[in-house]
Image 1: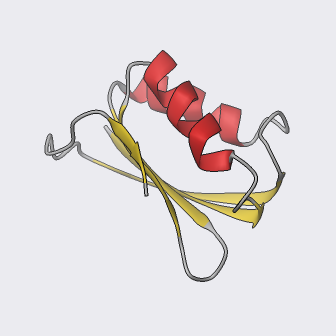
Image 2: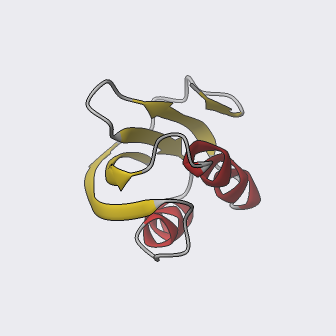
Length: 88
């Protein structure tokens, strides 16, 4: 599955993308965490749905760096065009 998540709050400049990358790699996911011009972080992750759901739960857990106000999500079929997990 492919998860696109948009994280709103104080999530830029606080180590949020690094934390997300570490959690995604721990779960065996591929994808990216990118700063958006509007202050959000966009997370794209591919892998088994169960593992993507675990990442989504972690993003909403309150244990992230900074402060997450909300997380929007969109699910789709995996494209298979991602390797590793990068911060952008």
